Amino acid sequence: QVQLVESGGGLVQPGGSLRLSCVASRIFIRIYTMGWYRQAPGKQRELVATITRGYSENYADSVKGRFMISRDNAKNTVYLQMNSLKPEDTAVYYCNARSSSTPDNYWGQGTQVTVSS
Image (cartoon, rainbow, N blue to C red; front, side, top):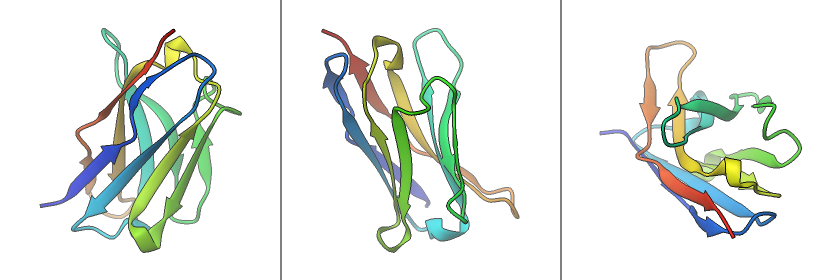
């Protein structure tokens, strides 16, 4: 069974930083577009950032210049470095693995990020 396991969430003050990690098992992430999405209470899940097999990155406008996605295929892990965090970044953050050539689309269980003073 494919698993994506997120970690690194927590409580941080505004202006602080966090680094999320997502470790995949039973798939090789090198063939997938990897992404981070988030869902705040009462809101729909939204894209935060994606990184393709060819390392092309895409970001939501709300996080551009503050967040950075990266991948380490050797470790089967994708990261999200989040800087200058704002209260509106508070959400559950989900890792996603999506294939461009098959219907494969996998989700992690999510990790909570809370930005509050």
